[in-house]
Length: 162
Image (cartoon, rainbow, N blue to C red; front, side, top):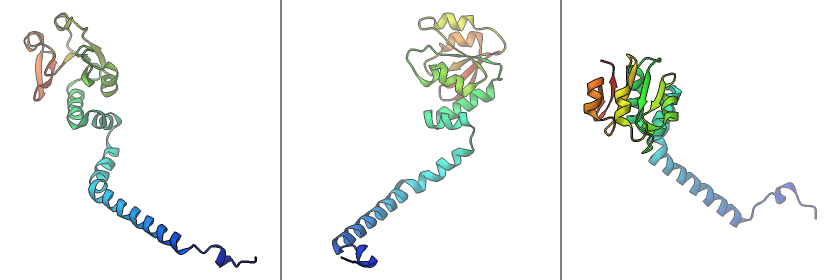
C-alpha cells in the first residue's frame, strides 16, 4: 500500500463538485450582502470613527436626532452648568442620569422627582442652571416664568437663565 503523495490528496469527483458549489454560493451571498447592505453602510460607519466618543455613542444609542440635541446642549451650556432632567418615570434616554452624565460630562446632572415637577421648576435658581425642554417636560408656562427658552427643533430645547 504504497500510495504516491498525489494519490493521497486526490478528492473524489463528488467532493470536488460539492466544494465548488459551496464556494460559489458563498461568493454569491457575499455579493448580495455587499450590494444590498455593506456598500451603503461601511463608509457611514467608518466615518463615525472620526467623531468623539460621546457623539458616536449618542448616534448609536439614540440616532442622529438624539446626537444633534446632545450637541446642542453641550454647545449651549458651560462645563460648570447644572442641568435638570425630567423625572425618572417614565424612563427615557432624557431622564436617565447615567446616560446624560456620560454625554454631558462634566456638567452636574439632576432629575426632578416624580410628582414634584412644579416644585422642582420653582426651586431652580442660579445663572448656570438649565432645564431640558422636551415635548412633555417641564410645564412650559411655569418654566417660562423662571427661565428663557432656547429652542432647538420641534418641541426640543433648553430653558436657560434670563
